[in-house]
Image (tube, rainbow, N blue to C red; front, side, top):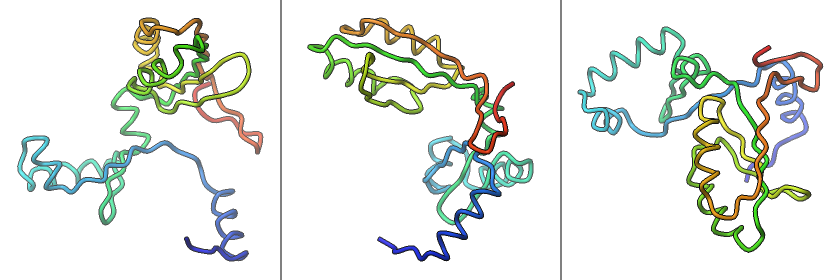
Length: 161
């Protein structure tokens, strides 16, 4: 592991303070692999990727391809997200966790307190996620909370208003 210097930490903090947190989806496949999976030629894929990059939908680098927030919005992943609080019957937790992990969630968190699990999901997938989770044995209760906006530590708002 790289040992970061105090100066480097200061630089990272400055970059972070001046940056904007965005969501991206990173693809770690070669263009040859993607072309085969998409059933198009490598050359055609390259032309489309270049156009998408110029339009702001992609960021590329050596060995990676990032779909930008703009691309995620075009795909219906609007950034509107939700948290689902899930209470599970203790004898069913292991099986329920295994099934819930297979659902389309951005993140899953095991937590302490009155609930057992928090699922962080895209708003576009909320209804399907709730329907699927209701079919899992041992799920006793769910409570969905759609994020209206985020108020970050600097006091500015981001997200949907």
